[in-house]
Image (cartoon, rainbow, N blue to C red; front, side, top):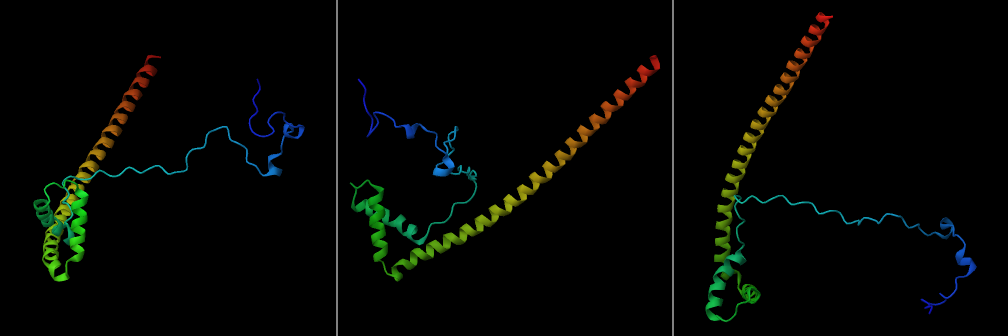
Length: 169
């Protein structure tokens, strides 16, 4: 039993059997190869240095540290982090600038400490990078000398063998 797919699929007409000139119609030819996706490949992220100091919390997060303790004491049955965060955000919005001042001062103090730590960290990284580069450059120079020395030594041996062969003749 023949099954027809779609309208008019029972018999193809003579016109549909003729080859179509794609240039006139404006259709693109299907390529034999599957097209690659146009999305660019994700670049690999550089690995984070575990020794790098963490960024200091903002005034809101300093406030949230204290707020969590009080909220958990008042609501011991609430386990969801999102509920605590939303309640903290509402409370922070309702605070006046005078009430926010102590948290902003603590945040500024932590930021100053962080800046000292990051400067020391960057200085340490710069000095270790210089040491690595100088060690690397020394070893590369030594490797090149060794390689060229071996080649020169090998050429000398080849020359001596050729001279011996000529003497034998």
